[in-house]
Length: 154
Image 1 (cartoon, rainbow, N blue to C red):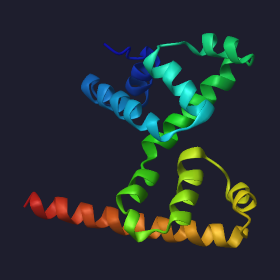
Image 2 (image 1 turned 90 degrees about the vertical axis):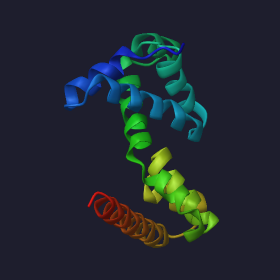
Image 3 (image 1 turned 90 degrees about the horizontal axis):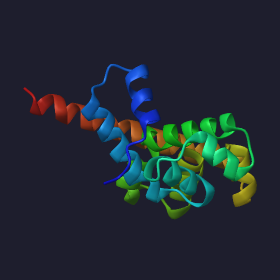
């Protein structure tokens, strides 16, 4: 049986009005989406969710203060739950390989537009334009889903 991290459960209860089962669902969703991460972010989330390590234990191993680990875990969790990149993957045929890579770097990894432009050797304007296109397609897709859900409930 996998360890359910108490901190995530407490965060669920403190930040919203969701029940215990929904907290378990969020934790399971995070466990599933960890596969999308690479490197240190993936390792931190595995240590936190799967192994049940505390911020203090991870900070000791990394040689940093535990608040740094806590902030980083929180940022990674927010990006994983955001769903923008998942929506891009679901609509993969609408995007080129470069656009999907930029979406991953921005929405999942958390790179800034400037860092992406530097890494990809393209202009900041091109990155901004691609992200605008991605947001428009994702927004249109969400509206279609909402319309279909409202029509099916009638």
